[in-house]
Image (cartoon, rainbow, N blue to C red; front, top):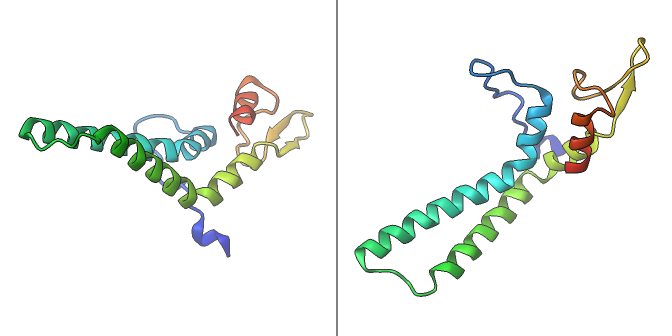
Length: 124
């Protein structure tokens, strides 16, 4: 039932531009709320500069920007909450292969307990 709310970016990957792995998808999905907040902050800053140039600037523009960025960050976090939870817990699932090495289940090209895996675990 929660698959409806699963905003997965696996189907859109820039393979024609660069090599893209499941690890890259993991980091992108965890950064989505910050990306949305950053885009909002940029949009609000541009609006502020336009208002300033036209002379219709509000005195409380900084608090307005901060509040809008907070709201967008929280909205984006709620929207991708299910995906964030799935990705955070998938990092801890490793499976042993016949050669004796352990690899992540959702990203079989990433060996467990390597630097990449440890960074992914600390981020999640």
